[in-house]
Length: 167
Image (cartoon, rainbow, N blue to C red):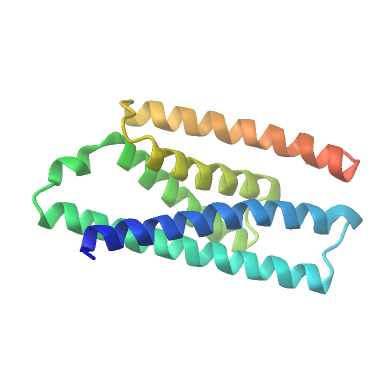
């Protein structure tokens, strides 16, 4: 297997762990908050899924850096100018800072959760959209709009599931 195939495989594993982890954190957190508190077993499950998310993020960052090196050392520098790549890199930076802020409890959970879900799914979509020809700014505008949409959707889901007004 060549280095490019290894990088693609690692990148896909990282995205799969991240998207799946973000989805399950949202589901498990909402289920845990149904009674207003997180009991020890729920905390253990959330801890496991947060670990999966972190592993996915580390794999994604390392394999992404591997792509940078591959493009640079194989004469494919033009690929480094792709606005889709830079939008994805921006989203990954948001994921990293969001994870740190959530860990330090410096961001409200509703915002951290929305950023996480939107960012992971956004990275997935950008990876799939090989032929998208938008500017970096356009990608970021779509991303920001998506964050607000996810905030609203999660608020509605929580209101319906938890049966109370949520922040």
